[in-house]
Amino acid sequence: MGFALSKLQLKSPAFEHLGKIPQKHTGEGEDVSPALEWVNAPEGTGSYAIICHDPDAPLVSPGSYGFVHWVLYNIPASETKLPEGSKDFTTGINDAKKEGYMGPMPPEGHGKHHYFFWVLALDKELNLEAGLTLWQLLERIEPHVIGMNRLVGTYERG
Image 1 (cartoon, helix red, strand yellow):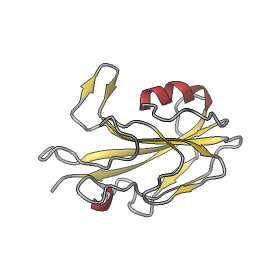
Image 2: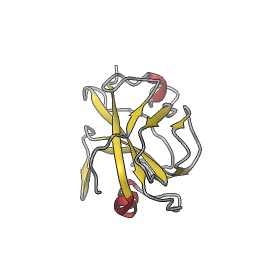
Image 3: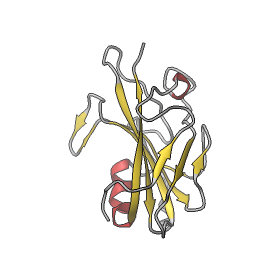
């Protein structure tokens, strides 16, 4: 299928699409991941992956842009939500070179940033090793993506 939006829907009880991410979920707060829920998975879904990426971050390096805040995968097809601060499933490496969630923390005076939380439905369980970067994950899962969609939240440092 490649990377195209599908009927899969992602939402959070913490913020609306294009709404402000509560400080609790940022580097200025408790820095815990927001709760996420998804519905309308494609038939044949075998697992999921979750990504959070800030394309507004003023960073450009060979083959990438922005800042990756979260890479989570090996989520079974039976799951349809993650609780706030979830430590379950397999974590990858964010752009701070750490495993797990790293909340929004745009540079002071840089204005409002957009944080894209993605859910990707895969056609099977891949049982990938821990510690993959976003780009390593995407390379491995692309042939297996059968649906995807995003929830966008915003944050600006005060």
